[in-house]
Length: 526
Image 1: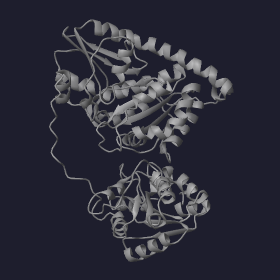
Image 2: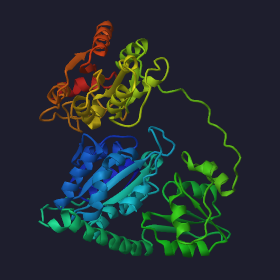
Image 3: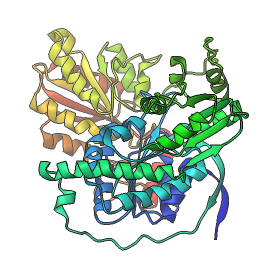
Image 4: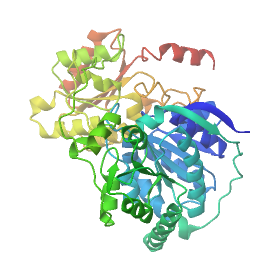
């Protein structure tokens, strides 16, 4: 029985995963992707948070090697972490369905960059879908699994903030149960030593030509014929803006944006007097279409930044390059009232430390009234950037350097930095603060390996102990403090550790103010 309901893109992807028999959903939380697996789990699917995106994709690959279907989810910068296995599995492929959701963030609503992950599909050589609404999130995801299995290729499923969080009417079809799994021994396909990888590369390129032919059949394109004066080539959420901004235009919406249906595009462009490519982010479609010798117009540089909307698309189509009005200043984000990180940052500020920061809600320590974060690059970089500062600065300056990282981020990619600290220790030693609030706070209070709970908040068999991990690696001093209850004690301890030549980690542990009640309820319901 079909079911009609109102659903966001993230909810639609979760329903599609359940309905097409996905065996496992695995990922790392990150806006705007987090709700996909949370909804999949709530619907009854099997889902889990991995320590990081690389681990998530590799677990998903294992499921697909067992002829199962795996859905791997992450935000756009997470694909950077997962890129290593992605590029190799693109060669070998898997017998089971493997779909990687990249949730991009044009406009950087909650990210450190607005990279356009359509580039990954081209670089790795994997087919890519770009749904424009919740219905396409549902329909395209099911087809992505079918195509992944038919062509033995991982599929990149690129969505953006608006598609993930906007709601529309969705028609949901019936559910199929996950099929039986098995492992078929096939080292020539599954083991990418050079001799086998050379063959696999040729097979990959051949399958992309086959997928291009499939795309030319029109299943994933939508053409709206109106004016012969103006035609627009578009994809994803930009399609919705174009429909409102230029209701008179003919539109070619492309759903599978790699490999492109270039002959379909060529025919469409030739059928209108003026043809414009409208896309958010990089000129990926424009460059590919122009490279094929198809005469189209792109967008001016000013429209490359941030999200598009109806008014911006109107300006784009009119070649209107007048400066855009700046939105009114909103209230700057800040650490929550009662956040345990506040006391730690007060001490770092008052001691005039050089703080190498990391990705998480604690990054907000860069803003007033603390202004206590001096660098922030990517997840895990606080420790290694801090080590670089220690090794380059004069001794007096080096002794002011402190790396600050959160508990979830430490388990994501901070452990390698601790290994680097112990192995290649600076002459002055180093001090790392782990601000442990017992959750993955910024992305919505998700669990991680150190909380003792799984994605659905039920107990895990063995929580990962941060302090045991640090001592096992060989850190000289591992201290656990509560900077809220004893700020002066924390300050004196930090002074002592900064003055020594030891490697030191101070764990400032106190639950997130927003998660504390939930954590207590989870503990009571064990």
